[in-house]
Length: 404
Image (cartoon, rainbow, N blue to C red; front, top):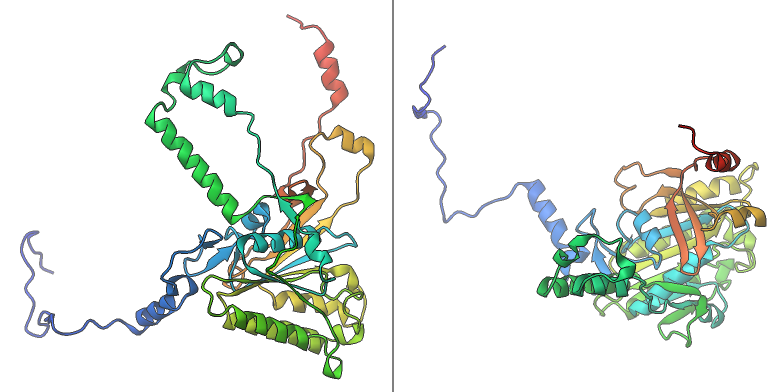
């Protein structure tokens, strides 16, 4: 074995001459690189030369996908993308006879109305459902506005003695104005993407970009052909409009009061055929449509021996995202008084997340989140077992004198 000096150049033998790179010869990419480059160019986000409107954002997980808001900020965060990617469908399951999922569906449709999207609702009473959409939340009053002005522009008042003495170093002059403009712009951009709604108030006028799709029995008793043909017609009407999105909302899917021919609607071949056809339409128009479906699992005999107990897993396989709401029994008035902030009304289970679950990531989360309904709609938060404190013992310790 021989050794060479560190700075001694290595000479190539005659058998292995150095490669000759010609400037005139074109550079050829490997087949894998060329394929990936072609895929990136044909993606919805990169094919458009114009910038995205405020209602659309690129996904932070996959840059080749564009997302929109569901109208509920906490649900957007739960989907990991910060919203619902275009070309995907989202299923909201509810395990009881409650109707919490309708709050999410109305906020989803109201967000589309505010963005100027084309919103289509399936199987609801025409005119009435649109009149029940929530209105925008009024301007918020900031209680810290007066204190922030005094801190940034001058010395603290006698009521603000608790503030730190370094008030004069906290952004004065141009820096303070720049910081204020940045905060205002960020809050305005967030509201343009996900509008805060007041579910206790109603819109003053009927939205003009809301369409209704009725569920009617067609030829051969098929109740799904009319829905698919109507969706295809709406997509054709907005095909040439750039960044125009169709939001398809199917509230109360398979509700017997809406789908008259229950025997036909619940047939696995018909039901799964409808979901497969709808998914095919969405894949062929990936950058133009999203679907939001709510389903009550109480309609199915999950513990029985019939075919209904296998429909739920089949439906979940044919959708891109699945969120399950598990309402809890209501608390008594005495328990509600003890909790000033209000108790949660149920749990939220994450079964599937669009695109992420299709790529093999494990995102199942059971009983890790809880929800509550308030004036601003549904709010989903992390849930944990609270620490139990003996209030009687704490009061006794507070009343006893200190022993030195």
